[in-house]
Length: 591
Image: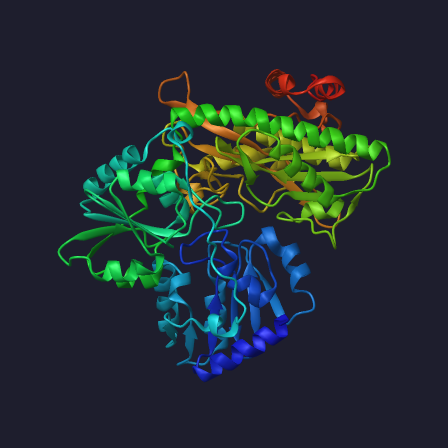
């Protein structure tokens, strides 16, 4: 079925159910950013494959609302369909609700699947619609009626993430959660986010592309715990470890019945921003609303994890060196190199590194104007051939047992223009400024975000995405709550604490011409000054000399870059040999 056929089928089902509109999100029942194929409803109905966006469909209109990261991609993927792109200025608002209020007559019924929306989101939509005399039905799964060939859920084996990598045992993590439960007065804690529960039980899966998570739910009690997962998925080691820690295994589909049967006199803590409306309404016990406890605990990497992170960056940096050495030689020898070839080389070279599992996201390899598509991913049928000229942006990462990586580098493959050098240099200045930041305890991401933008702003330039996000440990590459953003949404309002690992990735994008971004991962650590914190840069790969306008840099910036390059060479060069090592030494020279 093409998009037109899917819309026709869904609209017929809507008419049968006397529904005026349906809203289809990007998420799944666990409010995940990246979702299993089984739940990719928005991508199925619209053809838009970006990780963020919401579709609203009436009998006369089908619209996709997404933010500036996906404007170009949205226009490309929706071309030739009747789905209209609606550009969101504020990615944290819900303009599709306002659209429906304006378009639909009073008394209209809007339908959603309550499993796919958080309790908080449903309450907000109900409030807005009811104010205009409209009704929200949140227990209708109309998409499943139209999607006949929906993919099945994964049955991949779920394995144990050993304590030698995780740094803390299952028992230690459960004890930490129970301390916070006691502080909240909760008898139980419902965990719905996949990364939260996989961290809690030291398990890893393959149920979602790139994110090593398993599809499950969990309920932690004072003396035991319950994991809801499809039977037969747990490896022997994982099953035994859970049993040892008094974790009872239930079928994934039994979660609603379990919540129904909780004692009404008991209390349960859950996060209304992560718990679906359907699960929330199934709870029989007294509900205490609060933030998911594991989300805050796992954001602070322990000493063992930090040691692994520093080591995994060496391996990852060596894999990048192998890839970009190959690329330069291939272009020099006039070989045909496509964007997809670079992506494949990154996988091949990372896979040679010890403990590698897979990519942490689909590599962004954007040549020339494709680099301006912020979340661009090359496909064999449409990707560009890379020539020895122009700008190339490469954003990639790996999942290893001992850490998760995410790095972006921008290269010039010929002689850069003054405009390109200016753009790269002010981006680099911003990245260095944030890397060098020294700030008092209690500082939030929104306060630090400006460090990275200030040099672009001086030139009347900016970028539409956040400056950085939290990063997991052999876990989701986008891990809340912390990061750097120019607003007070979660990423912006979260206080940075020692042990938090975040990306630092300012950029600039000129539509139709080029895209540039420079990204390192930085670890929050205590400063030598009491009461202050700073960042340790852990990513290891040199910057692009040919794109740096040294005249724009201060002595302190030059010193930081030179010190960084010296560190990079010292850490990576032992993993390189011969001509490649000599080539890398030149890349790490002083500016």
